[in-house]
Every structure is written in C-alpha cells, then in structure tokens.
Length: 511
Image 1 (cartoon, rainbow, N blue to C red):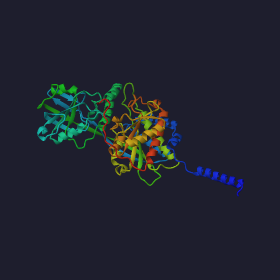
Image 2: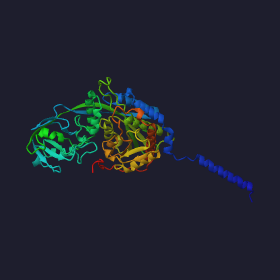
Image 3: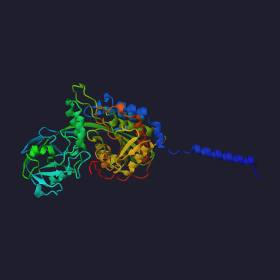
Image 4: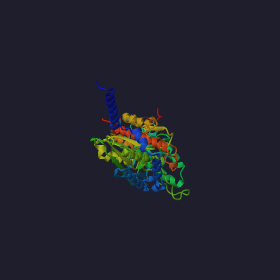
C-alpha cells in the first residue's frame, strides 16, 4: 500500500505537468486584441497631418502633388518593413472643344443647362432630319437609317441614378440601326443630373453648390475637374460609339427646336468635338506574404489623391490647396496602420495581404481601373477579396458603413463583424452608391468580391475645408482595428467567396 506522501507527490507532479502544458500550448491568435495593441491613434493622426500638408500640393496628378504623396507612402511602407512595387498609368483628361453645339430652327446651343453630350459620345457632325422613336423601342434599320434619332427618357441620369439600360447602350443600338446621331430628351429636370452627360457646363447639384462658393477665377477649374471625374464614372459602353450622342434638357428644347417638343423631319445639326490631355499617375503596392502555400491574396486598398490646387484668385493669390484630410488621407492612414499591424503580428496571416494605394480616384477611379484590368493576380483569380477604405474619420465616432452587402453579402458580413468588434455600429443602407462610388468598383467588375468601408459623406467633402483638425483619431483607430480583424479572418478562410452579384440598388428617392 502506497503512503499518502507518495500519492500527494504524484498529484503535485501531474498538476505541474498540466500547468507547464498550458503555458507552452500556443494561444489562438486574436486579431481584435492584437490590433488594439499595435494600432496607434497618434500615428494615424500624424499620417493624416502629413498627407494633408501644403507640401504635398493637394495630392493632385496635374499639379504634381500626387507624385510627392506616392513617394511618401512608398517610404512609409518601407519603414513598416514591406517591399513595394509601382504601377504607373496614363489616362486622358477629356474636355469639349468650343465648336461643340446643337443647332436647330430655334437657334444654337453650346453645351450647358440646355444640352450636353454623353460622356462616351462619338465625335463628329450629325446633320439632317430627326425621327422620333418611343422610349421602349426596338431599333429598326428602316426607321432610323440616315436620320438623327430622338428618344424621350424619364430623367437626366446621375451617378447614382443611371438609367437601365444605360443611355450609352441605347445609343449603340441606334447606331447599329443606322442612325447618324442621337438626341435623348430628358423629361423632368433632375437636380442630380450628371453621370452619363457630365461636362463642365452641366454638373450635379452638389457640384454646382460647390462651384458657387469658389472665387470666380477658380470656377472653370472646379467645373472641369468635377466633370472629368463624373465622365470617367459613367457606365462604359460595350462597344465603340462612333456617332455623336447628347441629352437635351427641358431648358434647351424651345431654344433649339423652336417649340416645346420636336416633330419628325425637323432639321438639326449636332456637333461634338472632344480634346484629350494625357495625365500620368501611379499606384503604390506592398505585399506581406502569408504563412500557407496558398498563393491567393487579400487586397486592402485606399486612394491617396485629392483635388490639387485651385488657380490663383484675388482672395487666394497663391491658389488654394485641397488638403483632402478625410477624403482620403484618413483612408491611407488606416491602410498604413493595418499594414503595420499585420507586419507586427507574431505569426504571418494564413494568406498573403496585398496593400494598394491607388492614384487617380478623384478623376474617375483611374488607378484602380488600370490595376483591375492589368494586374496578373486579378487576371489569374488570385485576389480573394478587396476591402476598400475611403473616408474614415468623420461623423459619429461609433458609426461606420459597409457598402456592397447586396453584391458580396458574405464578405460584407466579415467586414461588418470586424468593425463591430472594434466598437462600431455598422450600417449597410447606402448600397445605391456602390457602382462607381470608389476603388472597390473596378475590382467588383473584374469579378473580385469587394466592399467599401467608409464614414460616408460629410459637408466638407471635395472642399478646401477638409482639414486634419476635423478628422477624429479615435474613429480612425476603430476603423483600422475593424479592417485588420476582418482582413485577418478573411485570410484564414479555407474556401473562396462566390463571385459578386450584379444587383442594381435604386437611389432612395426613386420608387
């Protein structure tokens, strides 16, 4: 019979063995607690301050500030410990030549409140009789051949109110039917007009309100920039539109047709001439390898450009900088904070993480379009998902939006859960802004599941008043922690997300 002393010693040894095993057993990595440890509010605020500084000249491609910002972002990635690659790109700044006009029995109109070409209109002159077609038409060669087609539409399309099918596709069908030109008649005047007919003389109500606040000397510059971004966001045609196509708004009908509505056989002349100026930009990419053999990557993206510098005016002799502190200095600061948190993790993420700072977003998602169209990882289907971050530091500190729940619902759930774990109340109610709204859109269109994480709009957006003092560091901290948690959990998935669904969410005012 063993003594009580012997039994006690055995129990003690067993207890010590259990304690030792517990100490040496690897703990499961908790991304939420890790992010709270390694993401710094002070660093976030400092990065926004630097990105919004006058030294970077408003981070515009035309003024050269975007190139300075790209270099600074590249150096920050190097400080974190990541290797980078550059993706240069060139795009065209499109403008209307002065001879663009619409002439009829009532007189001649230049582009403005009365008429505007489609963003993807063909160039040239269409002259001759018009033929009226119903709004729900099946183009016929016998009906439209050799004539200018005139078709009524319900409203002037805007960025979030693009008609379905888009006007550009209707114009292509009319071109195939033999029409020499196309005039769409907009019924009610839509205050949010833009989108498919966005040129400097006819912009959305939001852009017009911004122009009214600017010095007279800067208004033409402001119009041109706003128009360029809106044009590039308009739905791209499925084919090449060779004939001129335009919208005639209610304000222009009497002036050009000599009557409230045109009739068959009325003679008109539509001229569209477009000038193109090349603009150069660049994307900055950084990669953090994953722990597994899977070569698929999770993409985290943010655009770094802003609106540059206004031309000099009497009130601002040196011009005026658009600092873009929240839009999108805050998004880049979050991108860098998330990159650092990943780099400091005790173990690499299961899948690699690709960080992308895109240029040219304000001029029409130019950098992300090039990336989505040309990057081999996108073409090979190796991008698991994209979490795009655009504007993170305004509004209520506890509130965040995830946009894209109708397109990639499972990814949106991961993003929303990560943000909720960081102390944010998540809303998914603005999916109408998903198409063309930010750099997630080209990835979605390339078949990559993508969502946008944002604080949504604020009064100073796209204005010189978007300054660092208005950006909330606590909110950026929560956004960064939430994005890190979501991205880590996405990287750990053993399966893939389904392709994004192409669902159109109507603008809230449209019933």
